[in-house]
Each structure stands twice: as C-alpha cells, then as structure tokens.
Image (cartoon, rainbow, N blue to C red):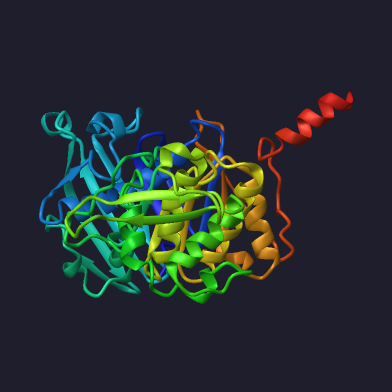
Length: 381
C-alpha cells in the first residue's frame, strides 16, 4: 500500500506541510523551496526505524540522511523545541513527536516524546514506547517505511570494487544512498525474472540482466553492464561495454551517465512490489533523450505497483512521465506533481496530468524557462 501523505510540523523550512503522495510523486521547483526537506522528513523516519528501532532517540545522521543537530532541523520561528513528523496511507496514520534537547542535539539526536498510530476508526496510543513496528500490528504503513530505499544525488560509482551489504535485514534492491550496493543486487538477481510491467516495451526478455541492458540501450545506444567477483568473499567489480564489439571497461573509463543510471535501474527492476523508492535527481548527467526515457521508465514502474518519490529539475523527465500517462501506463490520478515555489514562504502548488498527458495548470516558474528564453530571442518580450 502506497504512502498517501507526508506531514511536517516545525521541521526545517516548514512550519506546517501536509504533502499528498501518489504511486508517482514528482517534487520540483525553485532551489531552496523545500523539496529536499519533504523527502528528508520521510527518510528520517525510515532511518529511525532501521537504525534505532529499540530506542527513544532519533538519529539525525545515518545511512540515509545527515542533517546535523536538532537545532538544524527545528523551524527557525518555532515557539517550542518540539517538532512532528507523520505519514499515512488510505487506512493508517502514524505520528511521531520529537523534542530538541540541547545536550542531545549537539550529538545529532532528538528525543521521541510520543507516538500515535491509528487504523481506520480505531486509535492506539503507544506514548513513550520504543519504536517497534510489531507494536503497531500488521501495519502496511510501517512495512512501507521499513522497506523504503533511497538513491541520492551524489553517487560513488567509479570505484575499483564495490561492497556487499553488511546488514542481515538489508532491504531487497536497496543500492545505498550512493549506489554502492548496485553491483551486489545486480549480481544477486541477474537471472531472476522482472515483472512484465517493468520490462522495456520493445524487449520482453525476462531477466534482470537482460532488462538492465535493454534500458541502458534506451538511454545510451549499445550500452551493456556486467558485475562479477573473483571469489565468494571478494568485493564486486562493475564494467560497461558501449557496443557488442566494444571491450568491457571500468566505470571510470566510460561516460559518467552510465554509472549514474545503473543503480537507479537496478533498484527499479529489483525492488519489492509495494515498496517505496526515493530518488534524488534521476536526470543528472543524462542527455535530454535519456532524461525523457528515465521519466517514462519511472512512470511505467510506478504503474506496476512500486511507489516512486522523485525530486527533479528536468522538464524532459516530466515529459517522459506525461507520455507514459498518455500511453496508459500510469493512471492520471496515480501521478502527483508538486511545484515548490517562493522559498521564503515554503509554498507548494499541486499540478495534475490528464489522460492525454496535458498539464492541468502551469504556474509561473514551472518549467517555462525555455519558452521565456525563446520569446526573448525572438524579440517577443
């Protein structure tokens, strides 16, 4: 079941924000408008559940996000030292209340003061309890949090070798914030079947290996990927080829876009159905055609049962999403676009896509720079 809303109170630039989410949720807008803040709030809850499940302290710095001290995340005009984070789906809601304590804050910790969980019309107050998913029953909401994965904008994919996840409870397809575990998951599931709706429309080969190559070829014609290891306990190696007759090369010796896109492909093709994937800057280092294809792929995957929360500045990626909606791969109601404007005011405008791929509203500053520049060049303004 997908995350339906992320709620913030007194968190960073937002005094209050209730952000609706859909199977595909695209966050875009001006720099400093709060896009990253909204995603960080969600990831902070995931981080707390994973890294401190038996503690009443929330770590602000961990594998998913590094936010500094409690003072760094408390809204500048908050009237108290308290903040709130919450998530909900169509039948469940969970709210965490935290307090910024000066002594703990400098250690990158916040105190959990209260948890409230409700399911349908029944409420369970588990105030001052430890953060344990089992205490919230058979919760799809907590399961979605626990199994969320994050691919950050800064990816370390031009390495000589790549690590193996150490956590025994590592989430399927979680390539790590920097993409460092992508070769592991690729090799682990290379010969497993990809869900039909996630496959390339012109290549219905079933395996992860084949589908990674099919989508890479869409982004970078002729490109292929491979991962291997010399022994069971050795680190992994990653290589790319730019054509059937081209040699296999280390990531550092091919275009950076290939190694940047690879972790994203691995996650989108291997993540568990019903889970949530958060991606920052999916379009970076990719040329416009590839950016559009990435948007099309993400929309296709979101239509297959995988939720994607995405931050992007790319009009090409947006157009890829619009094309996928037009082609019937994603229902219009399953795509939500939030435009973050006016950084000082932290205002958010929600934009929808209709069945023809048309945008419902086009607020000023929403991917209109090309038209503005062309008008200026033409002397129209």
